[in-house]
Length: 261
Image (cartoon, rainbow, N blue to C red; front, side):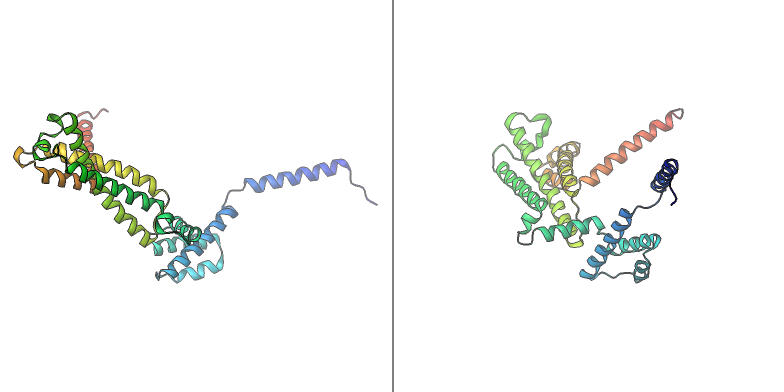
């Protein structure tokens, strides 16, 4: 009977360990990623069939081969077919429907509920401040610079509530469109919060700073400032882009005048 020496066993073990380590160091797509690709492809196919979306027939041949390159190409084609929905938004929508079948839409989607509650809050603030005697044409004409005390606070709350209604009008429409298209993702809750804050700031900028520089102060009345606050809240992204464009132009002027920098 042949015997195996301890040295040969250790050599064999060392060789096996080296081969295993070499396999782990080989670059490439892991099995987890390939499995995830397959799941997302099936999820997008199911979403497209359920919603009557036209699917590129080339996907069928690509899926049957199960090659990594073919799976990636199939994934790219399906992403174009189901856009603006994404695999992430499709998974989120499916999860909402599966985990809360017996719940109302407000319990299924806390984001929608919170936006509606905020809209009601701004509406109450708008009505409450608008009914006070301190909020009128004369106090709004004075603006932030000449107002003080309670009248100033009430006027700011009044304009902020209108700006808040404007931005929530936009966001509620955006949420309904996202739900219809299946493009809603969990991160929207964070981005919508920042948009509400930006909308209120934009509304105050439009109603106070821009209206402050009109040629005829008599034209600054309750209607004009309210409309400017509403437009500022609704189009906060546009106002941000305008201000960013102005800053970029100013920076370019200084860069041209100082080419050494």
